Image (cartoon, rainbow, N blue to C red):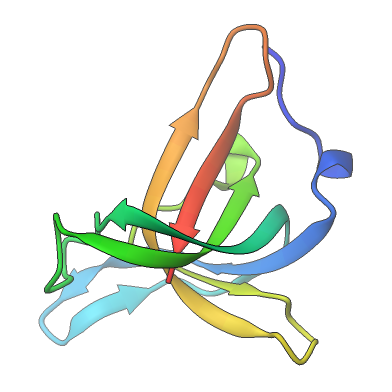
Length: 114
């Protein structure tokens, strides 16, 4: 099975995975720094897949596109910090996540975030 490798992903992001929803709201796991990624700042209308969102199921504008290795799959409502350490640093909430596992081409994860 062909997969992307770290050398194909020039950026590094911080991933804060959704741990669940408790009585006091959404809970997050410990942030994971230095996750290999390919990041683009571009807008696209995507369907909101966050279960706790008031706009769930509606099309909303995503401003960040990220490609990850399949081992770094994240669920909607998780958080990613892109461009860490620069003036463009920002934390974005994952709106939609797609897992692509192909037999003869690079497998990867694509996420769209706010």
